[in-house]
Length: 291
Image (cartoon, rainbow, N blue to C red; front, side, top):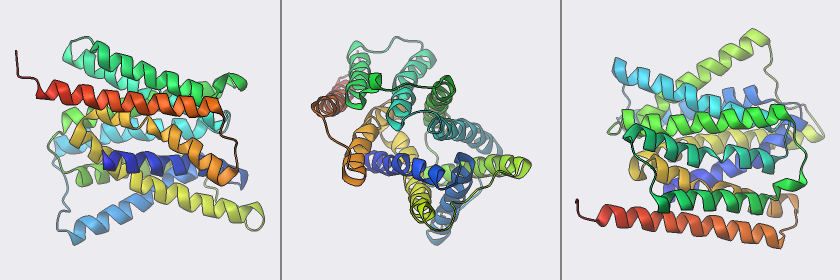
């Protein structure tokens, strides 16, 4: 739970920082290249120092490749949607992924979702809609499509890693997944010549600071989130990650001087209540003896 909370907070920081990077001349593909590179360096050094570094066998590499493609597509979808949509609306659409995750799990298990868990997911999404006050914003269809792609990509990666490699070392697994993300993004940038760092001076100063936050925050969140998948499962991880928009609102108030309305407080409380209820339901289910 603590690891997933850390992941939610770290990703919230990257959500808030991304628009500053764009304003200063950066772009989504540059962020993806740099943050995957940062993660590979940090994680690789840590694995070497701890004596855990190893290359996975072929089947596991293929699994990591597929999960890496799915997650990188999801991450890119969200970043691209921020070029067209307000952050709040993009995050709301993106955060349909907990529901998609639960539905994918149910399909693979050939069962219907539990009514309690399904109600918690719907309550969390309702809380997001209330907290983010999305009906006030106009939106572009391109942004909606990109945010939806983001939701699908992350849901698939959650389920994929949780099922295909349940006993794998999460650090080694995420290292291999980040290789996929880096290679894919680097090839795209090289082919299009679209690598763009923030400009110097003025807004570029804040842009550089935002780029550092986006890169380091993702490196922390990437490891913590996928480790959480293996510790508490994909559906539970996705549920706890619903705290991300709540953290984003708090950071926007603290860093951007946004007003915290009563609607946002009510929505945040509903999300938190849904997370707690979901965890209680999962704990009760695990404690029940088999029929």
